[in-house]
View 1 (cartoon, rainbow, N blue to C red):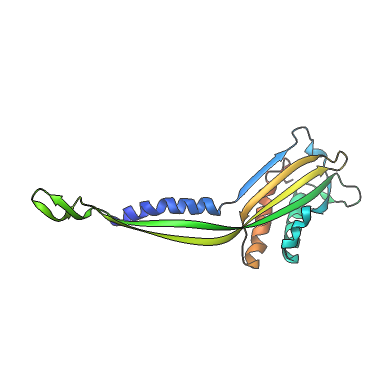
View 2: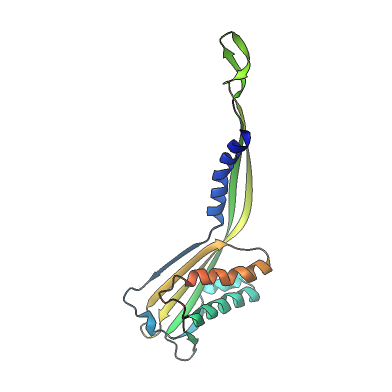
Length: 191
């Protein structure tokens, strides 16, 4: 009986962990824009020098991932006369996650019964709560697409997730995360 009770206590913690680890992807776009007309692009750079917190390899991973996703949508790079100018912005915040686990030894304890004081069922139980804190970094990447002729913002995508510590993990996660973000773009990949 104790194992199912412990599992039921762990379930909310596991659900919170899944929510904590999942990424958030948001986007918005100009409903009047004809996204099928955009065929060429150029990277206009990083807003407010936000790329300074990245190393050379992660910058290349991000730019190459976007270039790959854009190519899947029929875009080609054209720095001289692009249809769309793309800017990127990155913010990394230090965060702390706190989890609490309570073990409950219910049902046993001292209490007053029909015949006086004694040990038995139904008395007060005991509980122990332990806390743990984990430090992590949360990154938010914003990508803006500007129509080159009107200079108007036509699409914005925002990806927020946990920054991986190890370079090997970032090498795999950056392309996956950019692909998740680009799924929100109004034009699907060409098959």
